[in-house]
Length: 258
Image 1 (cartoon, rainbow, N blue to C red):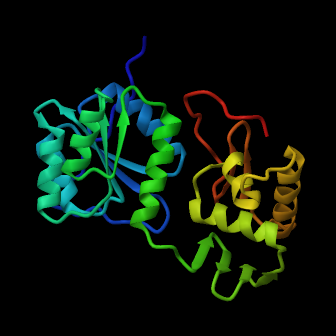
Image 2: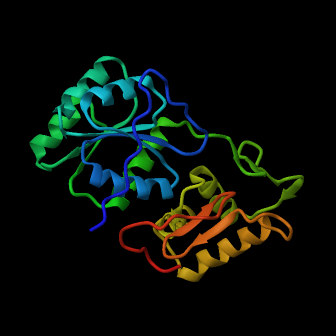
């Protein structure tokens, strides 16, 4: 069996990590390098920017340096207790959302994590898809909703409803506007079809071809002849809005076919 790809070394603790307008930055405080190799591959392909700290000491320094949208702390750290680290962060006034991973998913273990200041808990072993979904939800709490969205030369002013691709003004019906806003908020991440269908129709989801029709119409409007394509289909996963259409292979089961 080949060795897992190495985890990038943590950033220098004394230098704050800059936040970006798009990708959510996630700090993992966990000593399991093999697990983090799989997690990093999944999250990087999904549009996240993951960092790693192998123990509580480096995790504390990096967390306090700031710049992360979510921190993931393993309860059982190689040197120290994850909940003790979490308490120190909360006592210092750190408000970043924290997800605690637990080997013991019993009620007492979860209550202890919440009492220490956790925003969410996840039992090990976990599905990478569930981890990604929980991190996306936590990162949205950290970031206020924007009224001005931009991907490449595509601009959407939610306050006025104006949509432009370069110098060209676009007119979209409601369904395409809902799709566009959802994809732009998550850009460059992949958005699965279940989430897009829920955004359009809630629980009253029609047949599969209806979403295809909306995506076709949105692509026809925003990716006109001569434009670099922004709306990309990711087979077996969903759709993404990005300047670069390349997507790394992801581990784990495939989603419903598109």
